[in-house]
Length: 78
Image (cartoon, rainbow, N blue to C red; front, top):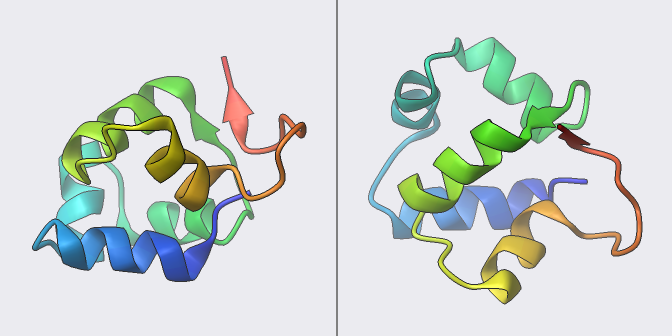
């Protein structure tokens, strides 16, 4: 599950906005909102892009934003 607050911190640290992140991922802001708020799931390829875009270069940084409930596979599609 995505931690919305941590996601927004990561976006700000990267010097971006949600709109720019959505554009970089090739999706609408609404689609990104749905994924951030756990209404739909991120694809693995989208997570990989987000790790690069948001400079989440360690497992700890990735876990803090996207995997707030360790052991659950919710939020990831292969």
